[in-house]
Amino acid sequence: MYTPMNAHIKSSLVLATIFTLAQNVAAQDLQNALFEITENAREDALNAQADNFAAGLWEQAEEIFNAASQYLESGDATQARTQAETAEALFRDAELTAIKAQYLSNTLSLLGQAAQARVPRYAPKTYERAQMLLSQAEQAINENRYEMELPINLIEQANYEVRHAVYLAERISALRDDDLTEEDMILDHESQITEIAAATNRTVQLDTGTEPIMLGVITDIEDAHQRELQLKLDLEESRRQIISLEEEIRELDEQLSDLSEEHVVLVQRLEAEERIRSRFTRMETMFSSEEVQVSREGNSIILRLVGLTFEVGQSDINPTSGHLLRRVYNAVEIFPRSQIIVEGHTDSYGGSQSNLTLSRSRAEAIGNHLNTVLGLAEFRVSAVGYGQTRPIANNETSQGRARNRRIEIRIEPQAE
Image (cartoon, rainbow, N blue to C red; front, side):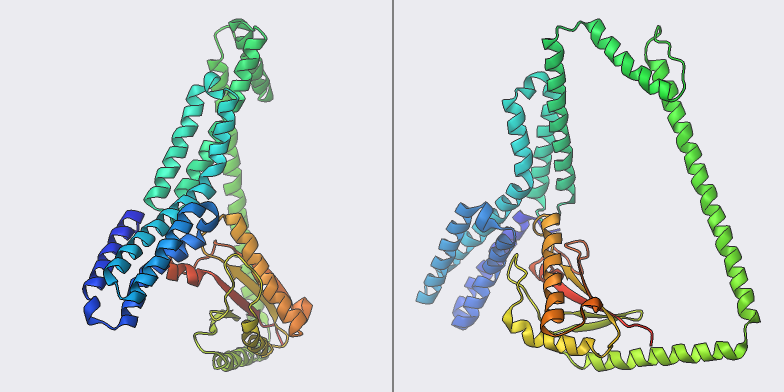
């Protein structure tokens, strides 16, 4: 399992090996080996928007990285290695700082606002629980910055506890300001329980406390839930019986149908499938594997545009992609009556909502280009963004994230 510490130790060992062999390799090979690890760390930091959220660390890492390049160009391999190792560590620190800033800052702000409102004075236990959950989220990010499911869950719990603490503090403060007695507070509590019990048609007697009433209400709720589950099971069983009967009717209809008509339908299906297969084979020969990967899902044709890329965080189409998109248009027109769905995908960096928006913008940009520039009929083209929800590779590596940042065009052939 990848962790920041393991990655740094591994990177340092690799760099040490590279420089030990420095005297035996060509200068260009040495430069490539030296900067590959550091550039990967730089790319990860940039994907985490470290230049915005950890600007100080980012600038320091950039400065040292440039110094490493200068030392290497002057032939000082030892200094180049030292500077590169330092830059790689700083890029990793900047990446981690940026991730924390994006995920933890809102909760820290809520805690700060609550502290200014003297919430810890009135609801110290709930406030401390929010702090503990935030600390656990930060620790989880430290241990694995590329797996955010646990930290996000902890952050959501922490936000809830902060809001809960604020509510409790306001309630307690109001009770004190109103000079309410213990009896007043108990009676207020009992009135709420009375309303809940009334909803279940229970007679409320509180001379022995609220516990018997609450146990009765809980029993009523559990019974109602059990009845609901049974009704769902009965409904599902009825649906299965209906489906079974419909299947029997369909089989009887098929047995009574004209055999010659079945033969015609079968021939038509085989001919349609052969046309799709032939056109798919033709489409495969139109691209190299570095440009477009062509695959099938049932009758659908999938074009994965591996040769098309966007600038980080942008959805503008690179002018150099025009030739590839023209060929994609030609491939689409092999199925002239098909429906075209442009699908956008991102890696797991950044917020899930921003990734969803970015993927949709990129898909719409490609769809608009096919429509307005290349002349594909507007009613045939639609665009959808899936953000980071449909990865095809591991987001823990830069290569995997690069594969996940993609545009796919789904061609749905229509019956002819």
